[in-house]
Length: 330
View 1 (cartoon, one colour):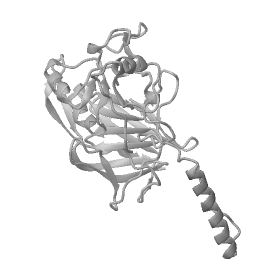
View 2 (cartoon, rainbow, N blue to C red):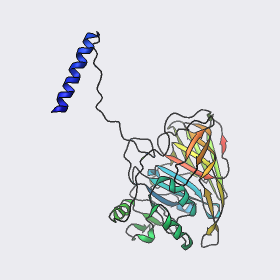
View 3 (cartoon, rainbow, N blue to C red):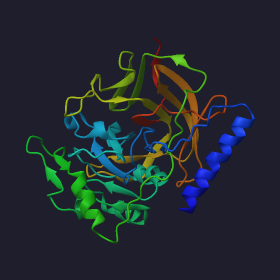
View 4 (tube, rainbow, N blue to C red):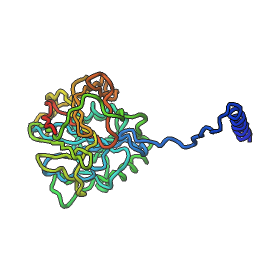
């Protein structure tokens, strides 16, 4: 009652003051709350627990399942010059994700910036397991979960046949009081108007020793369509995968002490420190820089003039490579 009386008194005094000053328009009292936004996409929506899923990216793994619902996708180099995805889900979970593959040493440093995430993957070599155990993440691998969660697709041939049911995975994890998966508490990227220094760009080509990606600007739908090994990168549901913002992050890629069962050395992509990058958004490319001093720091992105390089709200793909992309102007 006291609050109501105070509000009535405030409005009455406001009316009196406005009438004495000759102003008749009352100020508009906004009672509407600002719409909540997802911290990974900048779009309206809630922030759910952060789930990171390792997905195979060989030709045999395509079309991939559930990648179209990821808020952020990292493309990283693995053995033999191939690529593998780390897909991050915080706003929406698809019913299925796959094909699921194993963790790599680059994931540990890369994911540390996002807090205590749930990390879903098929397995890891024995030498790497102590590193995963010490990392600030929750191990939600197939080694710790039943086939009812990590199943096999009878229409696919191993090793690209493991499919994850993410909702069941998180349901089982959250039922365990010892498991703690965080949600994002602040924006991962700065969202807003595009930075300065744009260059009209139609195509960006990114190349690793045994994999190629292209991003082609689709002016009709205002998005960057993704091509993999010179073919449209189609999801299993028929959607042509795209990015609203794409980053080609130039990093150091060096041999690690780890390797696969075939004797190939596992490369390590270093995502701390600083370096150059190319941002693609709105049909333009931008020469920008990145910096991340500590593993627990979120990567910051700046334009050539030193201002924050804003991302376009929506889906983001980040390509970790040690070579600059080839850009074709519009």
